[in-house]
Image (cartoon, rainbow, N blue to C red; front, top):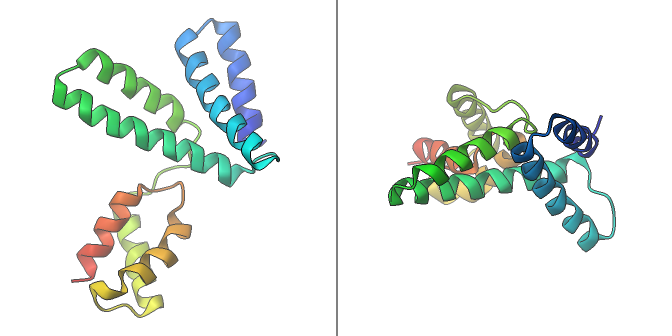
Length: 147
């Protein structure tokens, strides 16, 4: 079952359960997917849908930081709930240890030795962690090893 089909099924279930919050989050995701499909004039594959989901999570995490700084617990709680719903559609996230292992392996494969090689490492690394790890965490791990 593709992610789009799963979203459609979950949207129908949320309607049956009268879960308005989950329904609104799923509709927002589907709207973004549909807009992308219209722009590209074709259906999206699962990787492209994952990109949209990852972008939505990132936007909400950025908003969450701002709400926490401003002391808006009501909005922060809502955004946390949205992140949780969207996160259900992402693959299992890598742990820090797994990220570290993948970073070390990639650095050896590329033959990187200094920060000047950062671009080579990141370009080889991002496809391996796509949708399974936050790019910011991956970047920090690479910087830790390339000093």
